[in-house]
Amino acid sequence: MSDAALIDGKATAEALRARIAAAVATLPEPPGLAVVLVGEDPASQVYVRNKARQTHEAGMRSFEHRLPVTTSQGELLDLVARLNADPAVDGILVQLPLPSRIDANAVIEAIDPAKDVDGFHPMNTGRLAAGLPGLVPCTPLGCLMLARSVRPDLSGLEAVVVGRSNIVGKPMAQLLLAESCTVTIAHSRTRDLAEVCRRADILVAAVGRPRMIEGSWIKPGAVVIDVGINRVAAPDLGEGKTRLVGDVDFAGARERAGAITPVPGGVGPMTIACLLRNTLQAACRRRGWAAPDL
Ligand SMILES: Nc1nc(=O)c2c([nH]1)NC[C@@H]1CN(c3ccc(C(=O)N[C@@H](CCC(=O)O)C(=O)O)cc3)C=[N+]21
Image 1: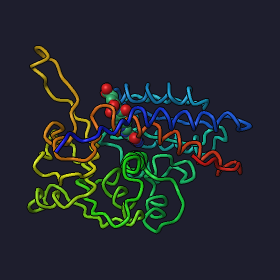
Image 2 (image 1 turned 135 degrees about the horizontal axis):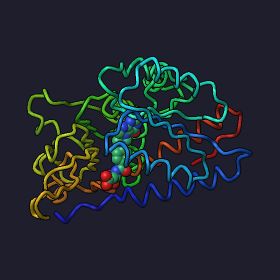
Image 3 (image 1 turned 180 degrees about the vertical axis):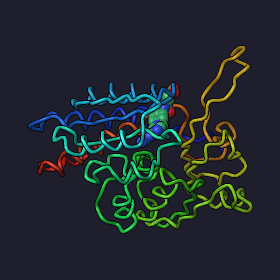
Image 4 (image 1 turned 60 degrees about the vertical axis):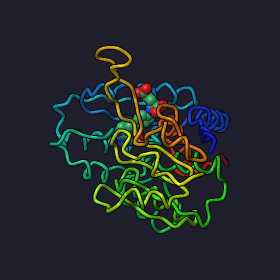
């Protein structure tokens, strides 16, 4: 079989951001996104910086709150309460993971569900499960858009999601179910994971283990969406060098898949574009503006 088509997440995200910017330009006021970062994890800092830049490029306001790693749960909850009450703030994102002293669930539940652009509040996860409109987590939403870019009708297909996190695996399964897929959620304890993956017309890998999904596990012609962003040593590039790899063995999978997302340049850029999409959606809902069709 010939090599799989590459699903270009970077270009798809750029096109989505351009549509968002065009819609924002028609609004009476710019939507605002508040991002809260506790501590100084270098990867988180890169991500937060990219997000702020793309927020500005889309014509929105960005409010960055960098708090020291010593911040208490009470201080963080106070900040969330101020952002909930701030009319210029349409979206609130508290960067995860939080220091272990802080109860992340308590922080997520403190965010106004109408401003929860991560879609992690139980009100939004519940609405997603019930098929009601709400804010949908950015990474699974981006994955769905990428899958539909090569396979617009997913109805009746076998979908396998590897990983059961609240952030990706569970909401991904809900979105695929809403597309009328037959959905299996697999995870690290699944018996014969290879066999389960071989059933998948749509395979979403979100386990956070570098190259865990082998090429021979891919059904010929399948659509493979790789959520993993793992930094691994790359001695071939030189001593001490690293590179980003996904949860899928890309070279092996590419020989069998019909279409596959690369890492980097796949799901990652779509996550940020969907965050901007959710911020625009939250702003329109809160302020009574007509929601643009993106
Ligand atoms: N409340 C919360 N919401 C999040 O959405 C959230 C979070 N916390 N904590 C951290 C993770 C991570 N995350 C990424 C988004 C985009 C890229 C991305 O664009 N990556 C580029 C590569 C960037 C590089 O070169 O390092 C790519 O895949 O092409 C990466 C990681 C969102 N997260």
